[in-house]
Image (cartoon, rainbow, N blue to C red):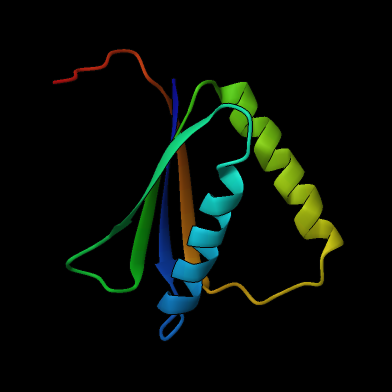
Length: 99
């Protein structure tokens, strides 16, 4: 399993636009090979911080999706980003605990 955690710090007044963009990307992921699940998290302490935790069966399939997404974005008309900063981290799952 491969997990991607992304923290998005939204520009003031742009959190709703950011959430809509994040949810749209999640809907696009559902059709991607290797996609397992995605959670959108919101900080109770910072209304301008939105995070996601996305699970893939393997890293190569995540990277394939991201490459296709980058190509699609490059071909589209440029849009203003609703984010001040985005930090993306990837992890290989080494152990799982389930109930």
